[in-house]
Length: 193
Ligand SMILES: [Zn+2]
Image (cartoon, rainbow, N blue to C red):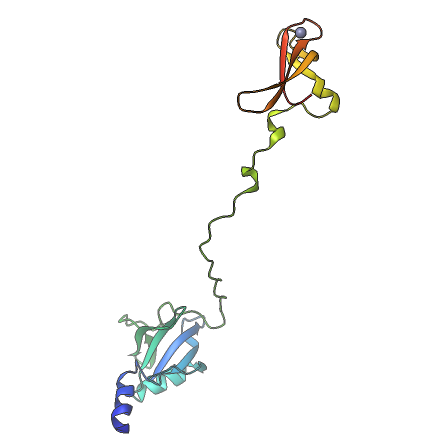
């Protein structure tokens, strides 16, 4: 029974070792890699190893696979192979027989980007400028005395309102009606007396 379980666990493994992060030197050879042990039911914490260790283990028949971290779990990458050209070798996940190491797009060691905080999809809060601003329609409300003044279309000037009365516009806003104190034409302005 124990043997069977052992077998099942063993069959469930992706590889002997899993590489989650890598760094390359100037010649694009692996300088270090973060390697985890695939224990079947879980993956060990990563350990930083050098290139020679990986190559040595592959030579001994151990298997390596790249893994990618997702938010919830590890994702299987590609098997790492060695290619020998003369006395040199490369560690790659593809079939390009070049003397450059390449482990795909796994992250660089130490280049830990903080996981961006998961921003919840929230409706944007209502913007303050959406509120109607009452004084918007009253461009000339700087001084108190302005309240008794209206633009007279005949004089083409601001005039004092004579016989001002409080009125209400169709939209319910208060208005002041009266006559021009100079030419007696009807004048009108928004606001209260
Ligand atoms: Zn006037």
